[in-house]
Image (cartoon, rainbow, N blue to C red; front, top):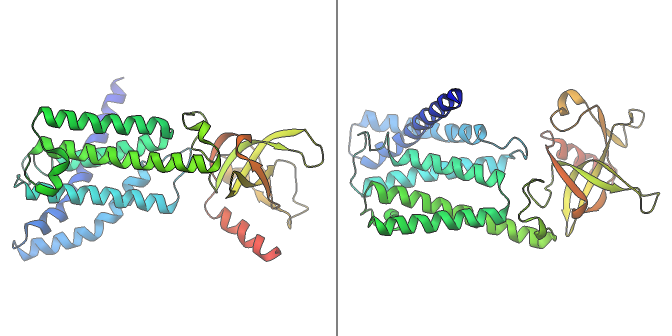
Length: 312
């Protein structure tokens, strides 16, 4: 218990430092008319902030479902946007920059924590839960703001509220973002016929995405009605089905033109032994997918599609 508390405190201190480093260039540039040397340092650190934002997004990436470059950079961009908007609103409200309740110790940290919390929710909860969480957080922020006479969402536009209103605005904007992602996921599930899994927390995100390794009930092509539970690589989505490549642990090294070797030393996170990826795709109904194992190694889909084009 004590170790967890110390770990939690250290993480908060680290995020506090991150929030300060991310916000400081925006703060310097917002003030304007100050020391040119300080402004130059602000521009320099502004170039460094995207690297730090990507590092934070990578540090808090999901281990089970993985994080591809596009969502990784999207999360980094969201973190930078949250930081910049908080500084703009703080400046418009005329609040102090460097006091304890100011920039270094205040709402920029709230913005960073809100992003990290939103990522955790998006990585762990199915869309039906996300809708409830986002709606509850938004409603709670509005009610609390009304009871404290804080302007909340109007903060960024008017800049006329104080610290509490700005913190509530961050929470409410984060809740809106979570709601939008949840609705998008529900639409995706409706489109692929997997809406029945909207509350399923056991099987990862539905529908299965290209580049993911799943265990699925794969029917035998030569024996009608018989099937086998085996790992598969999702190649692409195909309407209400997915195109997959079967993975086998039987030695297929004698047929390199039809199979891709997946050594256990490199694939131990998702496979239990040396395996071979069959390069002949087949379609599989989404309801046959059982358990998400994790992401394929980076570049695997590119290799598969390159070989697919070479043989077509």
